[in-house]
Image (cartoon, rainbow, N blue to C red; front, side, top):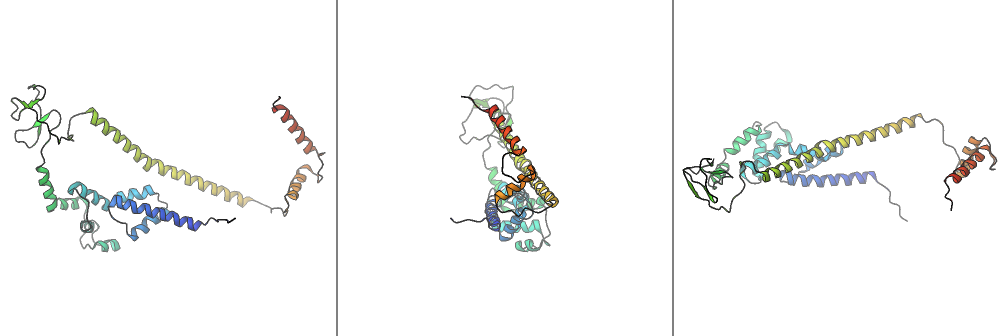
Length: 296
């Protein structure tokens, strides 16, 4: 039979490899790029050497300027950031005097704030073209609203004109016209109160809060309690170990060891059942058997 011995160093390396695979996935998902060797080593050391949890590392990545820049591209330009844009704007955010990280992005400019970078992105030709495209999208009014006379926005339906079912107030707001079905209709984010949509929003918001509470409060607190328990067990073990006096017996045969401690309690070295301790024990066992025996 082959005996497999536990190797702590091998287990630690396997744990680090699992952490690095997790980091590669997080970088792809959150930053839309491969993680570099420097970042891989830094975050791995954060978890395995500096006591950070995966939730702590994920939170720090999501607070980074690069994550903000990735999200800003999706929000303002409607697309994923490319390597050229990442290099340029991260150079603006880091500026000069940032050491190795700064040289990687090759920026000689002073560090800029996020607001300044956002303002510069909005000055770009790409952003202006996106804004023009938005202007050509047809305006869809919500429930209880109609387009204004200029066709540039929506206004509330006046309450003094009562249109029949299937009709709406005209642009001049002096009569009714037949409603036109719009197959491209989507809910307006500025819509009035709607029980259906608002209930979905409330449920989603509650779920998000529960998830945030679980990862940001519950898990870190649980980890602290577990680590405190481990520390207390170790401290107790070290304390009692330091107080131990004496040496273990030299007996090798278990029978000899038994006799030593039995004789110490009974005061003799015979194997007869005539000692007071053995008699008392036998009598007690008989009493318990009679008391708890199940009679047929």
